[in-house]
Image (cartoon, rainbow, N blue to C red; front, top):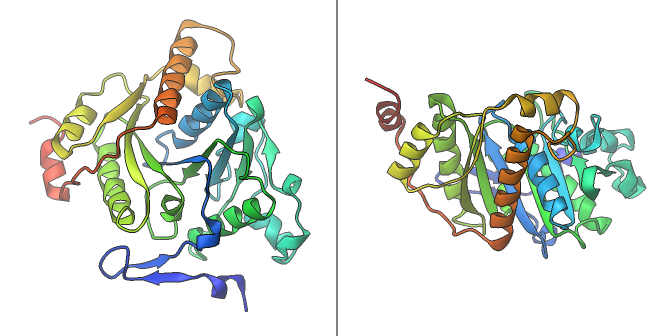
Length: 298
């Protein structure tokens, strides 16, 4: 039997007509606060995730960040280089997971953050949910989740299928990274719908959105006011963030300057708010035509 044949599937319980990868109860993450970060492709999810991980580490928390993208670039600003993916490492041992050790797929990054790149199947093949499930299974088997205070799933692009919504089965709260523009908010609206569907059967709830790389937040705030959502952070469009990515560092490793200090303070404020606990939000996503009419100018 191939690994793909072993994927447990849940039919019809996550929305009408759904075919979803089902979470094995033995893979439940316990003891840590678990967050999933979503948003439009290229919006800055990995930048947000890595700086948020660094902020939690600065607070003295034990953090595990799991990148869920075939590009495997979620954690490179924490480690300074691209890490091999779990799925590629499993292929090297013909999917005999018992041959792996934690150091084969977990790298310690800045501040002691434990970094894992789950990876994903080649385009058009396989299931991202299987990759996430196998990664969590390995982490459980090697007791890498036992001492974690915070686990952050950094998930690729938009929610395109049930498999890539799989991290929502593990998360306590989902964050959405957006910008103050139509395309980002349009994608956020669809992600909200995906999280709401998952919340019917899992504990995940929406924490709010992070306005990223945006001078203003008026369009984001207008949308949030309409659907009952909340902006919980604002990362301004400053060049220091671009430079930090080029230097392969989080903002917490960069030399002090006003823009960097301001961004660090916002990430720390966000981390502290998430650690204390956010109210669960249940916004009502808009129909496509309605969101088109809401945003922008006449």
